[in-house]
Each structure stands twice: as structure tokens, then as C-alpha cells.
Image (cartoon, rainbow, N blue to C red; front, side):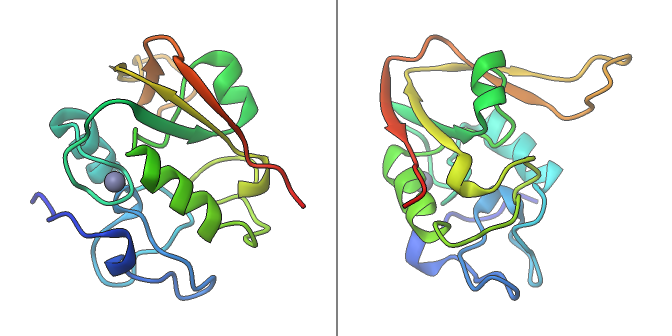
Length: 148
Ligand SMILES: [Zn+2]
């Protein structure tokens, strides 16, 4: 059930927003950017592939998410290549709605880099049932995507 990697330029377009649908949001026809695809999130975590393009991760790797995720050091979009994260933020600059299951729109996302991460599966009693990713220390903060 693993899906093959695709370059950023080859990702399918979301039918509503016209922006690329990242690997972790689904690889089947009709996939949208609204929510993450749980199977792909798990694949990203266990196979250590990029949440955007689906190819094997190197170092450093990047996380995109909300400020509150950064504050908790618990991201929900799986790790990506740094270049893929930057391409995603550029492509989503005009998306005004919360997407990828996050609670804020892309203009309020942050981008951080790290060398490694832990995959945290939700506990039986956790209110938030989504698996999360905890960076093992943020090495470089590339900055934040700031609305113009
Ligand atoms: Zn990538």
C-alpha cells in the first residue's frame, strides 16, 4: 500500500485551491489538502519519507505547523525535506483557510529544522487522537512565514 514518491512539480493539484496535495494528505485520485491521510502519516513516520514528496528524508529535516504545535514541540504534519517545506509554504501563501488538519491558515505556520524526531502515537485516553512528531531539538530556525 506504499505510494511512490513524486517530485514537488508532479504532485496532484487540490481541486478547490489549485495547490499541490502533499504526500501525507493522500496520494489517491481526489485527495485534497483539507486533512492528512492517516495511512500516509504512518508511512512517513515508519519509512522516514517526506510528507510532501514521499522520498526518503535526509538531514536536516523540516517541520511545518502552527505556533502552538511549536510551543508544545508536537507537530502533526510529518517531517519534510527543507526544500519541500519551503516550496509548500510558497505554494500555500494565498490559501486563507486552515488546511492539512491544522487549526490555522498557512500564513500563520512556522518552519523549523531539526536532525531527528520521535514519532508519538496517541495514548488510549488522549483527547487528541492524532499521532504527533516531536523534534529532538530545533537546530536551526529558518524563520516564519509572515503574511505580506
Ligand atoms: Zn520532499
